[in-house]
Length: 198
Image (cartoon, rainbow, N blue to C red; front, side, top):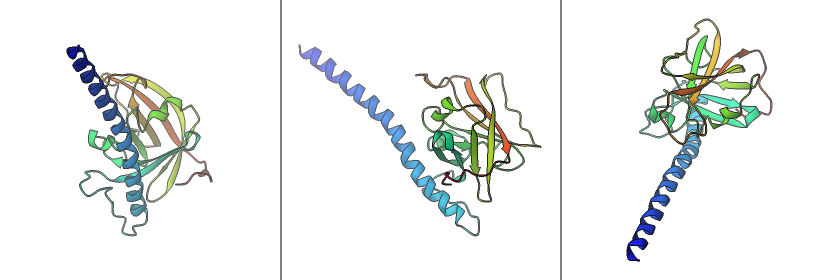
């Protein structure tokens, strides 16, 4: 009987540990967005156009704000798309063009936190990308599932294009697969939605 009690305690402790670890990831993402919003506000109000880190030891900083009004989403985009950046928010790939400049801008995020909303995105949805200088609107024109082992994103240097990337499938319990979900959008001449608070 004592052995069964020990096994039950170990299993319950393990389950509690797993649950708290998963909760911490989501909590960290929410808190980080608050700190990132503050750093973004400082960046926007800095006449010298300096970058502002969200916390002193951060190795990234805000470069843009991505909004999807149809999905009630506003997120700070960070410089770089490495693991330490993506833990806190969407990241801009340095291999692509800078946000809102001519060319292809690539932004990545995790499927279970910041880019979870991509599973509900549709053709013709509008995205807004705000930088220090201005806000551009982008219309979604294509959605693709690709294998990252055989597919590479082509960078268009002539037109303003925004590509959002996340892992696929959205409901997978395992991580590290090679499938990616790509959302392709192109610059439009739409004016900013007046209900959008960016």
